[in-house]
Length: 135
Image 1: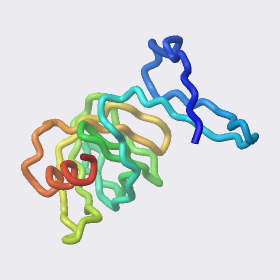
Image 2: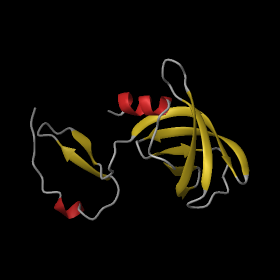
Image 3: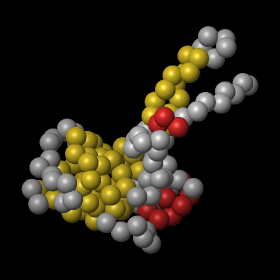
């Protein structure tokens, strides 16, 4: 039940999450995360499929925000930044709703891909999910 104030202005120019360690007066060490994203990223696990110019592969959606998501794949995909792809996945809502979205590749790391929604208007089951699950 203690708080500590800290000047974090030195992290002003960081673009991504900043991870720090803190120590409680009792000696317990804990992790602190300072998130720089505009929208909260929710960890999820949705099975899906990606369609792109090079073919089609199964994927797992591992996090979700209002602007995009991150997928993980077993196979390396031949994707390029700003390439348009179609991602289909199943939500973990009561109806196991199917979602199909046009996405834009924003980030490529081996086995992990950051995708942005081509449109920020979600008039489907994903819109409801984002509204009620991400607040």
